[in-house]
Length: 503
Image 1: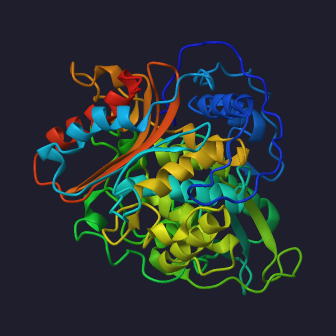
Image 2 (image 1 turned 30 degrees about the horizontal axis):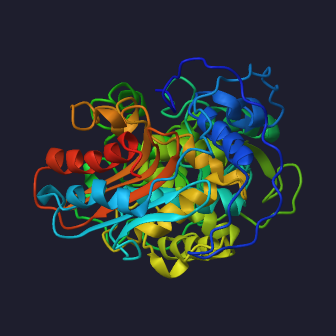
């Protein structure tokens, strides 16, 4: 299963220069960035659509382990996004109102439709209807989570999973670091290139020497609080789109990752999840170490204090590391992976010294976004995935966030563009923009979608017929019609942006 859709070759982009520092900004004072920097940053963001893409070349193609042989460098990937034309005509407020006002009043969108449209190059707000009103965002929340973890951890950060010596000879403690993509082995891994327990088990056997493993202790204490967010719908834990969020799990807690990989497209990435991901991972690890004899050989506990050597209690026996954060964000956005999103929110919390919990992740995300100069008063989160109905984000915060990621002032944030589905081509937009009324958006709308019952949202970028790059967010949380009708109504709005100069 590819992380991102394939793309046609179209040349090679030069690396982006380091931009000058840009002070934090508030709405109405968005700092204009150089168009040349924008072109390069967005080109790099477009390159991330590839798999394995440039990230594997820059940061390594998979999970690492002690003594691993470096993979040969990959060829430069082709360009995906053409650079926007900073001299293209800017739509006018009057032109946009004439084009959009009739569309946002569509009955299929319900009686609460909040919209923001802005210019990416300048940050200028161009159209708003309830733009500053906090609205239920559904999975569009992942854009905020992605920006927060890229800012807090950095694109190159990898999440470790460790094994240390237990308190008694032969006991091994498997310590979860919060990597949701950890696999058991290469053959059955759901996420390509993930760190693997069989690699870790091999390291442990070498470190133990002649000491035979006798027991596995699972330490998943890095995460705290409830494993399900209280605001989730009752069917989320069993519906296949969410899972118990623990610091140790394999394959996003999928019960049968090989089957889930084969059926991902037809099931829209839903899959049966295990009830206790940490203990399941521990049992898988025990089997790899050659332990047999039932559940008594795997228990929960905490690792001894570090500081020993050899096989002394707490001594490290092995470590494997996840894919870099930049690639985890790409998967999270392109596949709308809720479990990865919750793990990323907890990484934000840990980076900011907060508990690795739903509450800690939400508070830390708010802190990071505020530190970037975004209006933190217009976002209130309960989780990182958008499954919670208690989340609130304003459309204008989303367009501010996308502008910030694309204007060159924070190049590390441009990774959020790589996983954005493309209208009529990939991800959750693959089968949209197919009818005559929306076809102008095919190939030029790149956006994250969000769906809960009664909630539909879309936010991303679109290039106008004149070549101007805009960012938009349309959030509705009181829809009553059919899902297809609501989605087509949303697509008409973004297609109108693509098809008109709106001057």
